[in-house]
Length: 492
Image (cartoon, rainbow, N blue to C red):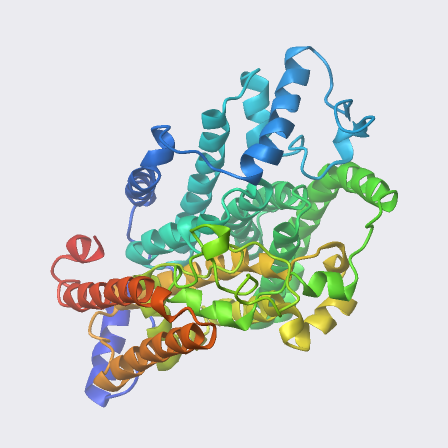
């Protein structure tokens, strides 16, 4: 009955020439597991070189995290608790090290079942956690009543977009973000269904995030807090919504605090004895996202981030050495995919990203971008002075992890709109606007190449990027004509 009523509203809206109403949120009519299995298939295809052992996750994953996990496994194999590590200087309290992986459920499980985890085993554990995060986002989309095609697109962009693809070596941060979709699922179910069980599960998963004790975890926590406040404020009866969700949220708080108090207290005690218990504003600002790196959302390889350090010419580098920044060349990579970015541009220019059901994530994306830009805007000074925990971290550009996740959600929502209302095609004016924006970014890349005497390095990566966007636009155009008759074909 609800769906017939909605179709009647659509017909009336078309006849009246007014804006078509959004589809009913609770009209879920797709099965979760086929979509989740399709995602896992795509995920395995995209990570095949790692699964087959031809390549391995490099840098910090091997130089820092692999020894931590090996020590954890060795300790269990010897029948010892891994609280103290005698191999670091004259020894250190391993239990207080936020990167020890002792309180990381995936790595703890690996260490318990494998006394000598290989490079491949650790890589597979990281990739499995990423895949589980993508599955969680699919479930969250289903809870929202959004189309399965949007869920699948969002899960792929979440798992491989921005920092999740370019900074896979930062094991702890990858795991912190991988938990986020499940925390959202349980938290929103706890509030909307007034479910104590989901509250307990939300507290458990939120504790896993906090136990990462990295900046991505901190930003995830603030995002979850903001989401709760938004759900309360946007409810039809905010007071009733708050009252109804208090018991589930109290349950979440009790479980979460019980799990995090001791590890957090030990980490704070260890930090207080270090030479860097807090980061001053200048030290934090040196890890800012340079505004020029925003072009990597369109052309990720334009500065040569995947190449040798001596060939990299983005900020900071030997070519661009006046920034005062201290970040690695892959920190500022924002690319989440050509089709997701085209959908984002469509949503931004059409105003769809301001729809009530997704507005929170559009605002959150803007806030995370301001945070990542660090000292390049005055807003970060406010974050630094006011928000607890910000002074503990030195690289606001870590927010790129959250930027990728939020962009994935928004792109998935636009795919949902496209598949649930296929008659809502972009106008020629909107298409021209998106094309003009892409050309403006391309022109900026050329200007930067001229300014830094690196113009010869621009055409190949920029041309490749524009070719991908052209192909993505063509596929989107073809798909829109097939959605009604063959939605699976169109989504594929």
